[in-house]
Image 1 (cartoon, helix red, strand yellow):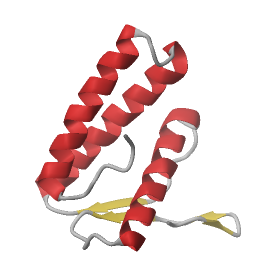
Image 2 (cartoon, one colour):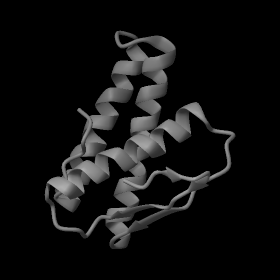
Image 3 (cartoon, one colour):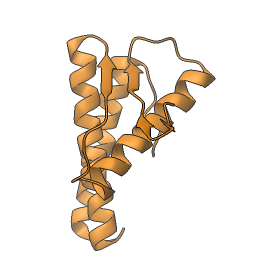
Amino acid sequence: MNNVNEGKISKVAINLDNQLNEDFMKSFGDNIKRILKRMIYEPDSPPFPLSIKGDRRKVKSFVEVLAREKDYLEAFKDRGEDHYDTQKKKLVLDKTAAQFERLTGIPWPFK
């Protein structure tokens, strides 16, 4: 994962064509956490450099599952786990994550 170094924000780079191994999965999960944290808790902060590589379908699927993860986490934060809207968003997230996994072969790190 890329971190903040000496006041500079380093680039987050995700390559959806990388081979799956332990290092890739750790970096992948850490980068997604960083992106989601910024999207949910720091939406007005300046953007940080982000690069997502892979074929068009993989990148589109990644963006879709990331957006569904954000929707679910916001509903969970605002309404709680047992609220109907939260449960509905979780079902949509699970379906979108399964599609991402089938297309890319990369397990979505949050269940």
